[in-house]
Length: 503
Image (tube, rainbow, N blue to C red):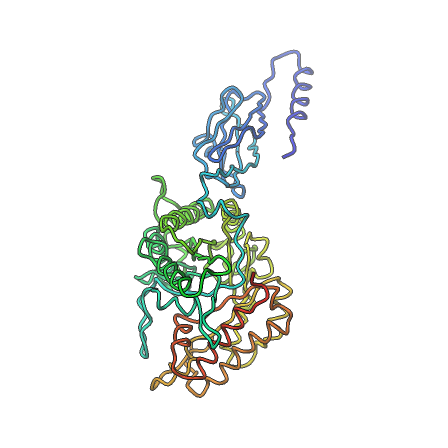
């Protein structure tokens, strides 16, 4: 911040010298500079003119607090210094200061600083890497929400070794081979049906207890990540160690502003409290605090698992669109540009990544890098393109322009062994059940368009791959007795495992 203090000082001295007939006391003025900074605090040096008292408050860089809040909640400077404490490591703050003489206040001054990250704030696997980890491919694993059973078949509520197995390795005529390098834990609602994401379905937004339950489902002592580590261990016992590390990426709930996003009069203080203070999600600072709490809770739980083959690789943004510019739809209720860059820096300091998979043409796709996101994949949405209005070639061009990876997409509607169930139908992109057994060949053809387009567009070996396979369709494809399903599964596995981008 450029200092105006010397100029103010000279002006006030000149005024003082020109009025010898009576004593003049000017308006209070202050200047702040950053002194020493630790991982949980900072010393702010204070210079003042005509101010009897100066108060300094640490806050968000994007929200200037009112003067009375700085005075009531801030630290009083002593001997020209205000010592701020209780701050989060690896986090950017602004120190806001106000000087006071009687009932006259200085203008609010500010200076930015970032707290340090100490070795003790990192877990062993985080210390051992330089930045967010790299992986060439990731598979989406859905679970932990409302128990899912539909008219045709039941989807397992939990993940065990057998369910993870076709994601971990595959077997062809040449033997068993390693498959995905990373595994994305994704959950949209809690077991009671409350939303983890911003949603217009009218449901209640998940609170602190639900967030903690989500962390427990995936990273708890008996959670899915433990089963995944066991599944990797079983494969390693058969075929030897994997050629590269395996990573878990954890879903991150949206800090939804309202208890019911569809009701803008509903509470913004529904989530819960931290350190005895009730959070209000109308404040960006409180949304960030909640996300940082969740990130550290997951990291703590994951570290306690003592996984031998699996590392935590980062966190995933649940919203598939990021309204991050004023004027965007409901921007004032989302404001991702205020939240995500701070979360990105928080994760950067811990050598964890921040990841995102938007749908085709979603808000934020053209600015994803500026939001602090480590890497993003684009959904072509071609699989459900019943009207053929989303040609793969255009999606591939957009992926290349945006510097993203591609998400491959299919559901149970491509699995012949499932679609032979009497009366079963599969949904299109709008949720209309239109696909039947006769559509399986055309759906397989569409799925092959993803792989062919990725190769012909020059992205194979250059950008990363993600796989969406519905709730359990990869397992259904791999365990099918139909020759066409097994052929499709192995074709997919070869495409993933032979990617030149893999180390």
